[in-house]
Image (cartoon, rainbow, N blue to C red; front, side, top):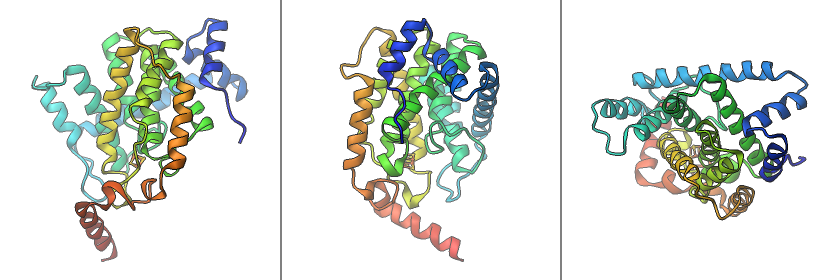
Length: 295
Ligand code: SF4
């Protein structure tokens, strides 16, 4: 497969044209797909609405996963926040609760936007919907932030992988955190270079994360990893906006992720043959779930 642009190339183009990352990606995509920017904005607006709906649905706490292990946690966290008891702070708790909500909807076979994958679908809505609320950003800017996220996701997909089966969970939740951090900087009024630093900082902290789903289901640890990845992305946004830089450029972090993914054994890449999936509790869950299905 021909490799797409690097982050460095995107930053150079954005600088030359005086565009934000999101606006650049929107322009490039419209050219590549031979369509208009407005048509792409409308398509992205549909995605945004699906994300919002998934948050609303997840917060009701009514969705349960196939195994019954997952569901209702977003509501618990949100209730604690609303009661003013959140120790991690209102913004972080709101972000994490939304990430949980969307991931729970996915685990319960509801409609979500895979961003970049279904397993990591809670991270972007968690971060971006909350930051939009905090900054008062209108949908137009939120859509551009989503294009910025998409641009970073496309770089990762072409230079490395966004698949847990190929690169472990670093490629799913790590990529989602990277995309959300870069997009979050756009929403917060940062420039493309700061966005790339945020993406790099978010991804670096998730390097080496294995994919070890209990009973092979996208439930445990996936749902809670979405909340953690969203919190990580939020912190990366704050760090980048404070002027903190990643010592390793994002392209090189992505390269490192690819190397780590290749070195990772198959048992830790979505096969449910290692890590948490082999714990005694996980094996019991698997036996119970498979047994119930066979009856
Ligand atoms: S543990 Fe595996 S299946 Fe679950 S979110 Fe991560 S990559 Fe996806």
